[in-house]
Image 1 (tube, helix red, strand yellow):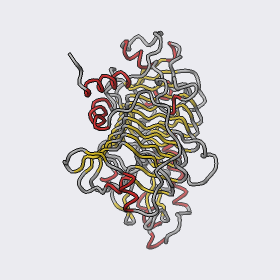
Image 2 (cartoon, one colour):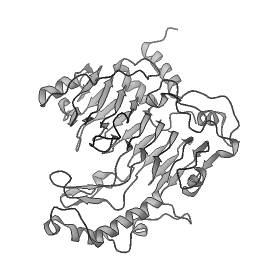
Image 3 (cartoon, one colour):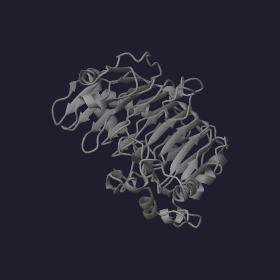
Image 4 (cartoon, one colour):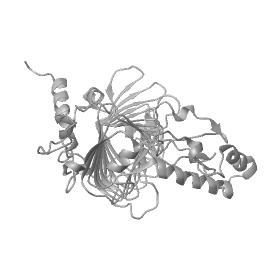
Length: 445
């Protein structure tokens, strides 16, 4: 029987998203054959920037005694080789069930009060640094110092470091909650098939000079990639769970924000591929480049973002400084209270956006899908739009932006991506294919 175009695209996507099987090798006996194969899979050839050069294999070379199934925070830290980033022994870590970053040594869950320095209380902090009393200057003094010590306590508890040559795979239903995976100063890491929820900050900082009215800023991303190379983040789901920022109180006239990014790539990191993930209902999502300062980031921050579902998110989809970032075949479902923008064009950024599909609520102005953060150019082509229940149609996002804003952004970011594992899909097929395969629970585990 003759295949339809949609059927062919779905079959091609199903073959592509599972990665490149490595030769059979011993693995933990409790794991299914498919789980063993997925644990040893490498990033497919040419699949984004993480495939450049030596590619990304994670823990594919792990010996049998370096393959672990973990169910607790302590087991996760131990399987990663201890709470440090220096263990480069190839390793494969399978997560089963829910691992909570707030789990204490005795297995009981800690709360923010358990991590607070004796000199810190939120009520005391609010009283001391109320702009009506303190003014519009950065907090200082004993209460701020106690908050900083509290942050250090939480960092030791909820920030889990990942060494080089590591693959972390979630088994069916696996969840990491209340923790950050910190990938810093390492190479060759794969993270797949996990649901990451609520990497909350117990002690957000008040920044009175951030914007016109000040802002609360939190410390912890769900996955943070810093000073690292060859990282593949694939088929994960990122959410705030039942603790969204929209449910937080307002202090000093600004939302008390307890979450930071989903997947931030900063501090000279490069050669990262983020594929087939679902980002659901989050605010600050993907920051690529952490500073406007021209320096070590120049020539770095090369990231590919493909076949992801951005579902009800508000901003940074992604926001880019410096790097060459390939954003292709993603589905954006956006709109509602708090929506800010999708593509952030920052200082010396070079975003190439191709064949992305935007499903928008009626209250979103197409011209606001792009935000100028000091950049000069954006390559954008093949975009399609469906808004407010209307028909799908091609759309010129850059043209809409330039018609409504000054100065214009140039339409040539100065480079053409070559690292793509397959030809791009026709844009009208993107929502169907991404909807079928993006997020945790879609790999055969």
